Image 1 (spheres, rainbow, N blue to C red):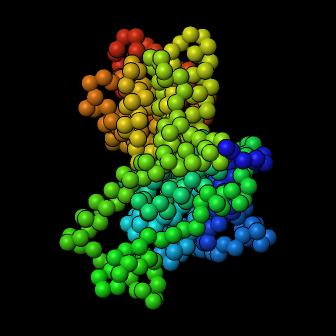
Image 2 (image 1 turned 120 degrees about the vertical axis):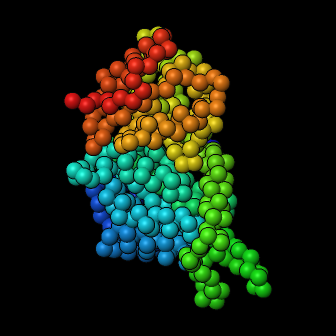
Image 3 (image 1 turned 120 degrees about the horizontal axis):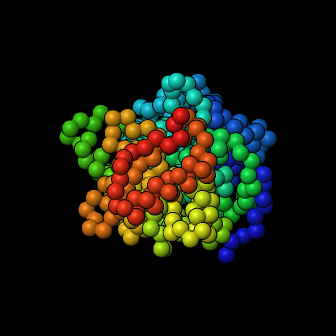
Length: 407
């Protein structure tokens, strides 16, 4: 049964800061970058007001921010940071180190286009560039979900079967700076839900089982030189860990529903109108709200259309996606990141791969949209549905990849 919650007017960045405040985080390392800055500014207010006992460390760059989190997490602390775009690019080396050391850091990425030319508005090129870095990636639709997902992320990453960092994304300005009603759980409820981080134990010959943390009394080596004799095995362990995250993500989505009354599909995908749909759109992030609005409008007019919002991109929910869309005749995949030299955008390629071995599968089109914050109004989404309805009727595709809304 969900508990009583208070409604606050928060933008997405503030909602993330509130979630971090309630999760009893030990360490936050911060460097400002638009449109993420509000997260760490707001959290610094909580620190200054004595509302949290977090060690708050301002640093000189995003590379340093994630490096500091690695040090803290390796000591057994619960650690958080946030960034966007060029800041994430500057972290590049450390992003891989965090996952390779199996440290359950949570990082909010406020999606913003990568330079150049320099642009501070939303697309998904920053986080999509990290899609093979062995981080769990969850894309949120609004400020409420950003709040809820940060809380879930600590449980997911710290699960003993997972032990991987988690990236929670929210669209720059569209979510990060937009005031919305957000239901906030009581502090003690969140604290009970996330619990205290319990580092996993490892078996050391002659010393028994000890916590996998930096401890002078039980010295361990973190991040040693790892050549061809063991590197391969350690990468396979990362693969196994992110696969084990699949049931954990679903389980925690259900557990969170019990305390909040909110869940997001099965934790991986959220659907609308797919039961009898002939066409559907796959979408990530805030654009899902526009797609859902148009789908409802068209269904009222008798068109059999639906949508699938992809919430978790890593691990990619290929089974859930195929099961939901197997019967659909035409699917449009909307990618808010470029496909330079590729067969299509990242979500499109993953979707095509998921259906490759299936006997029953839809025609699949790719729409690159919204780069650099380009607006994607309902009129554009209607155009996509119109094209998909024509493909479902004729079975013919003139062009598989299109750029939506280019002058």
